Length: 281
Image 1 (cartoon, rainbow, N blue to C red):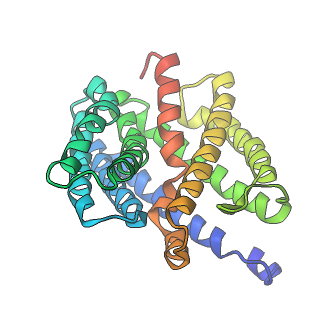
Image 2 (cartoon, one colour):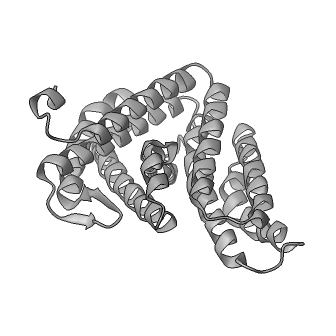
């Protein structure tokens, strides 16, 4: 309807964003409402493709391939800790053990050239695309009673915040946060999405969460701010990795990575705040 009313405006970005988000929403609905194992496998595949696209942006050498292989192998291990419900190992496996182990395959037989760049960038990718997103799978194992609904609540609010930020920025956006990285991220978009996402949270929380009024409203605030931080961080990250490669930059606008950027932040932040304040987690 908006495209017909204003044919001169470019709605291609919001069209791909909405289409992909609703596709993800349907997958999450089926995955979370029927079987936790289906959800686990679905999210493991999502992490794999997101990490793969992140690696495709890196200017890598042949010596980095072993590092990438070990990173992919860490994904099923991370999800195994979720499956058996070992929270302690789940929370430290990537930030501690994988971070300490990962430099070794890069060093052995591959020398030191470009060592710091390849290892640090790989570790950062694992933190965002595997550690961050894997929290989505842990909700149902942490609280079987509320987990599925909490995931849907998180997905809906993150989606709403993402789309509203884009729309408000498109119509009212003037002050760009990082114009060199993403002109669609504006302060007006942040404020508009913040207020509207909080309002949506107020109406949704009684149906999808066990929260009281105070935390129901606070949930919208948390998810809106965390989603903004995720979109902003990965926009700058992509820009930094793809300087001088405009063709690849355009192709990745419709990638998994562009769609899950906000989830990489909202999922772990929301999870740990709930776990800290509520006994049911």
